[in-house]
Length: 130
Image 1 (cartoon, one colour):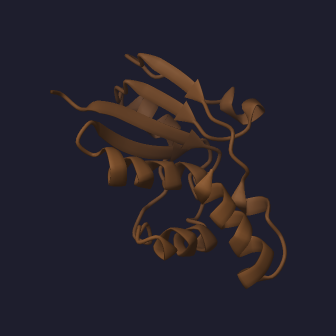
Image 2: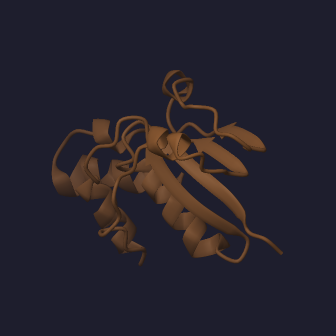
């Protein structure tokens, strides 16, 4: 059976889409190939890296990628799943050959404030668990 290709997209590809990609690789690698990208790629969120490491998933060497670069390259995906808010999801390009486009709204760990071990860490864990 051929694996279905899944692209997770959020605004910066620094947290939510990185976590989604990692979880699908961890739990669905027999059925799916997963990637993630952002509309405006940024720098990987260190709190999300720590939150994922707590559960044994290492994303520390991941690089952020541009959704538009993948689109321009003509990459084909069975599913494109946006994991940001609805207004940001509307900016996502339509990918050639996409069978299904889904929108899953998750809180953005980049907006969590507070002290590192407290609110920011808890917010990143909450986004991870959603």
